Length: 326
Image (tube, rainbow, N blue to C red; front, side):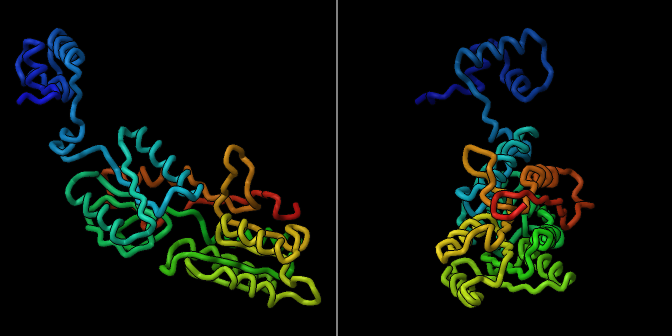
């Protein structure tokens, strides 16, 4: 039974040319202009489309890159996916998105797919211990897990220091760093390190509470209750590891009767903006998400990988968003 999909042989027969001539036209090999016109006219008439995937397998490149993300419901991950897709498209590449909810088996499946030559490389934001071949094009975001795999990150340490110094500048005299995140070490852990360094350098008292994902948020309420003296919170400046966390902490504080920013000032990290506007959720340290995406794509597609740095750290900036007293 004849396939309903036209083939190159059908195009050759319709155009009245040799099959090799059709192959040359579709692979960009010069042929006479009259032959090229006949082939293209025949292809349009038959509705023939080149199988780019099959062509890529034959050429050893599919012009497709995979992106591993925990999810896309978080605005930061969604923006990162969009910018990476755009940067790849400018280079003639397609993006295959893997949303894994940080499931290590799903993430490893993505890596295994590359071994079968179904994509040309991977950009991954993952905290799981993946098995990655040394010659596999792989770029990590926010986690250095192998010296031969480049990592692209915002200046997390500098951002933590910047947040502490901004809170001090705004008159805060007793600070706190609050964090929830992966139990596995990553570049984002440096946010708290930079914060603590700035506090020690200025000899400003500070507290920290670092919890892993899945921890009970009641721990934060208990933390705040332990710092109430005479009906007042003795902490007046808080740096949260993410904007989402800062938003949640603001809700907890206000439910306990404390005003933000009148009683306590808050700074988050990410630079997330409200849907449909440019309004920030909170005062924040802004990650250069577009630059992170474009840098990751540049590293992934570079031909000479011999001199790629292990870590590329991109600068961050501060922006007020209503939870500090500028």
